[in-house]
Length: 275
Length: 109
Length: 138
Image (cartoon, rainbow over all chains, first blue to last red; front, top):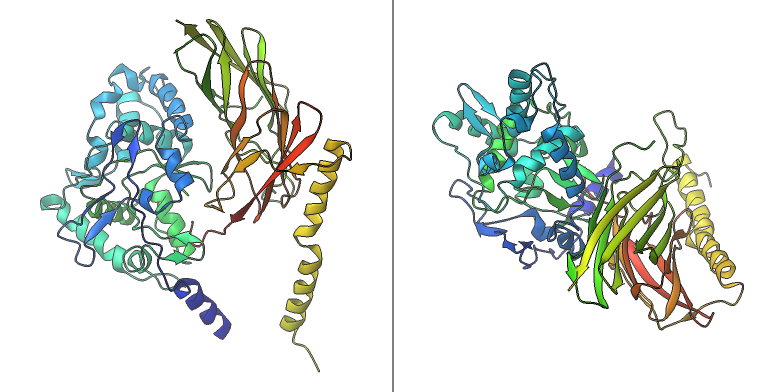
């Protein structure tokens, strides 16, 4: 027991110097991305927000700067095929009603309140599939869904994240904020423990970012595929030995809204490349 | 038959005669190394792309023998001389016997 | 003196690791290089490998090799379970003897490139890549 506590404090506090985010600038196929900006007013403890891109190694950063080198685009190819594929009882495909460009700006505003509910991009896609196409909903973090959220997200690439947090959104935002700062799990940590209090530091060999979600779904080198926002939340919670909330459930949606608000002003980088 | 295997190739559309161009190729393939174990603890058998070739108008540019240490979605970048207008042919050979192709035309001014 | 089980396990693990460490795999690579060069061996210098000093993830490590005047280049990873990575044979329309790819490295180790030159001799280059364990990668 004593050994475990020693090891834990060694893991997190060992580096006496922080590898802060670097000062590289991100241009993707000629388009300049905003990876650093003043933190929104509601963030009391952080002055400047940075995209996760700024915390990755040069080789990883380079992969995102070119749409061919970016391994995520293999999944974009899949998404374009799915776009044109007829599926469901109504004999329709996405392309029967939509062009991808119709969704410019959408990624930057999600999640948002519609009626009584907070909806994410996955919700909107599945809603269309079920109600308009008569098709089966896709699994939240499955390849089809992540490929499609990448395609829709790509239409907003370069636009600033800008979600509504007042009015109808306020209760969801407050709930998400509370989750962000609540310690959970065997390791008794909150999102803020790493991503607000210690971003820029190394946790073992990982360079901690601010945990922004402006680049999701993201291609992770670790599993060589696109990862959804809720899938990433689940992984983080598992790592601090907490029982994760459900993907697509109220908690993760509220948390997604709160996190999206913490990235206000950063460019959408979907589909990004991370470690 | 390995499913969902798709090639992607990046070749400039035009070049000067005799110019050296850079080609990038990628193919979506899991590259199952043969080192991983399944839920029951049994080794998942190797299943990879084992060879990649690039030709221009029938002449060889590069021939690569791949081992399981090549990452998922094998990526190659290399340079080719373009003597005249024509077509690049890229071929990937799968352990399971499948062969995948992609072609790209290039015109010389 | 009686050992606790924990102390005994730690001691035996440590001693067996120091016996079975990188050197075992490194000799597999030496054997492979010997086989490739027909026993002639390879001379260092003349060719180069570019690889990150620290790999953010051992799954996907970008590597570039440059061997002017080479006919073929073979890549090895001397700490992987099997050292062979790839062999690049350059054809008549190859513009330069360079190639880039992405490889898997299971642990901190050397990436070794052995180039067969036009005159039948062999040249070699090594790059040490630190492969880190993610701390909270999820």
